[in-house]
Image (cartoon, rainbow, N blue to C red; front, side):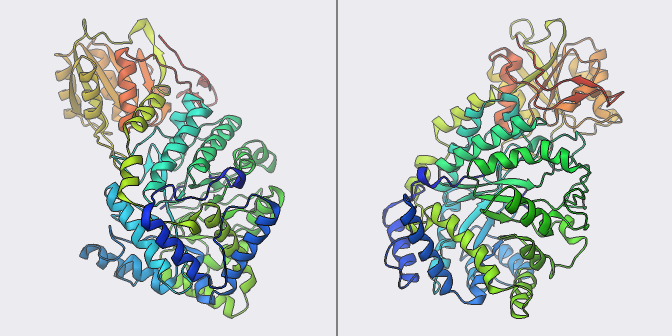
Length: 622
């Protein structure tokens, strides 16, 4: 599922195919122009008012030639299993038949004429750069080869940090909260530019990022470190900067999750969160980054499957709320770009209505793109029937399709969509991109506690290090596990570091083993992961402190861990456990890089959550 902004400043956007070139781009251009019979010129980015009018006419002409079934299909963005558009592995064919009723991506496009595809790691879409590029080309060809074929929006969740679908050897950046700790709009823009450049080279032209939620609830189980922070003005600045970065790479990014998912203790994948903010608080907090994204020319905004009574007291989720999507987003905020749902397979949107009603109600509310319904057949036929029965008008569909085609035109997709190996090799995971990601990460590690000058560790007087702690499943495409990455990075920094994974819930025997191993070390680094009051991770840290050895705690996800570890004399936050963030933290621990990050969220006291232990902006250095 996507958990999920690119702007549409058309005066600054080119129309060329940045991801590839050569004969592939020319072939797809001819195909598109032939498909739009009667349209005598390519659909290019307008530079004058007259050109914009002409472009609009051409887009409307394309819509006028579409059948009702083709129009319905254009509204859907779907998952599909397999590394190839036409010849996936048998297991992926079986999964497609079971869930989608087709064998391949090409058959999905042929049957339902969907307007977009979303890539997932678990669907085996993103195995390596050349495979991804070939899959993208196969998907585009399958669509363009159809009568009146159109280029596809190919999307993924490349937030960086905890949510990433395209992994190594692509360049992976620190996640949003780490970027928030760095506080640099220039770094956020660079992230968008480089990430967008690499995605476009792979044939991916829409990214469900950045997260525009203001995370003010430490217990938030679904957003957390995916947010830039708790200060709405700071979040707004970084959202807009990342938008501009993606714009420069001709990739549509997506601000999510409107009207704001930052203050919930319920995960909308599995439940139906209720946001209790007043309208006044929403204006001052949640709305601020979305206003900033819109001002930056955002191309697409993703909805949240949350109930927000102050904005709509009907009990409907925001995804299905006309007062929220049409009244506030379109009317009050003046947004006329693409609105896309979060995944329609999530529980938050399925609680109140059946899977046949959800897509229809979403369109009636003001949505343009319907993302990943559980059953494409149920959802597609429900929308078709709603038009045939008069519940939805064909003109309503045309409104959304025009927004979608405008987006495709602004991205230059009508000028060529096929990519090539040369473009992949020149753009994806280059030395300069990887070095830039490391430099950005080094500006994000936050030193929260450093009593008695515990840090930095000294490789001459403390050469032997023990690295213990949590090894959560690594985010997609990173090397992992965290203890191993940390140990390797510290060894590279001149120490002799040994990794001993102890897990997120270490047993008494595991803790005993770690304490015994600490006897042979000069210092211990312990990676913590979402420590709670009753967590045995606290016991591990306290037992290690009792050995008298210097203990350095590194919170590898939520920075709130420090409140649960009152005895530690040195504590840092990396905000994620991806390789790039762990390498940066290791350099700080080793003294090779000075800590520069500042908390983008407050940390409350564990014994009294009404009081702040460390405020926004806290961060020590050497």
